[in-house]
Image (cartoon, rainbow over all chains, first blue to last red; front, side, top):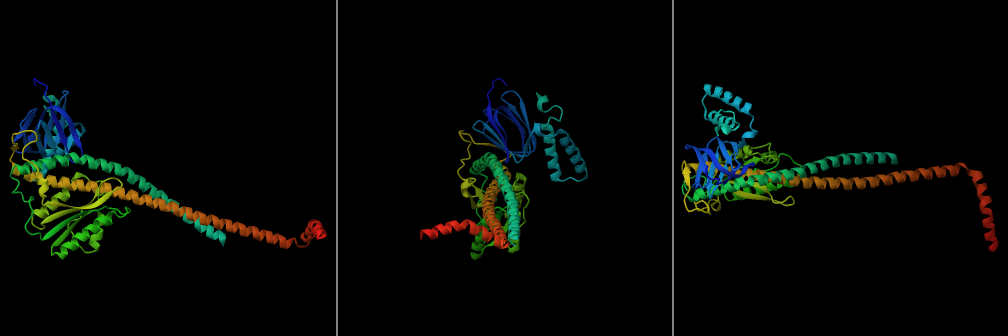
Length: 142
Length: 318
């Protein structure tokens, strides 16, 4: 990033505000649209999100990993708000448990394919990724 | 006889003291939980504010009118009440306030020829309304003092389903709004369909910018997922308000119970002390009169010797 222009970013769930502060970039995944990155000065944007590993590039240079389990993102007036039913900070996730969940769900889905199980698997992947459990993600990406 | 009464009183005082300890503990617990519950109410505000804004902007941008959850139905045949009470009692008029408001609304509905259904939230509502044979939907229990968003989601999905399937034409929340720890009020809030003023007021444009939003995938499908979330956020806010109010009511009820226990202890100890003093006085009287009766002659003699001169001198003066 050539210039250090920042924007206000908020990650809000009904139970708490997970993050509120200045960041240079936010990457999240929208419903049907794939991964989207927002930089400061992005055009007004409104989208539904799927379970994903959202990365917030903080102004001071570190990356905040958040597992966002569905919700919405609104970009307006130089501010990015992520509204989600449920989200976890990467640092709060138990990596071993996320890994175990994925294996259990994959096993379960091999026998019967249902939408609820698939959604849960997507969430488990998001959690593991946010916890830094998959190679080449999170801090390793940069 | 008198000693027996004293012992009974002592037992009663001890039992009131034990009760007082319990009510005092409950009062302190409730007081500490009010603070936590209040923080949870505040923590939910940013989310509900933002989601309200998004709903408004989206509704104004179009695509809103098709949603079945928006706009009133022409005739309302059946109303659904979601009554939020506590799981436990011992909280003064908290539960009865909500239940009375619900019953009053149902009476009006029956008079005007509408059908109703109540979704009881909290064991007290379930028990009360079931006993009185009201039409009940699925009860939701077991989380009244610490509701989580998952609880709100469950209720939200249930009522949205009721509405969308056409089983009911209107959903109303009945709960106790928390204003301060000194004031709470029972309120009725229409939940589904969304009120006009909630949806209006948005301009469909992001604040401070002239361009329209870009949408992904498109406004209609976003709105379809957004409105249930909005309804859940409203229910969650109501649950949190109700929980904070429950703690406030319980604290007040337990405070007055503690005060009453103190008063009772004071009165009982006064009666007990009087009873004890009475028995002591009686005992002394008995001893004195007994001693007097026993020491018959010699007593008379002594008295004569001592009193004699005084009597004589007084007679002499006369």
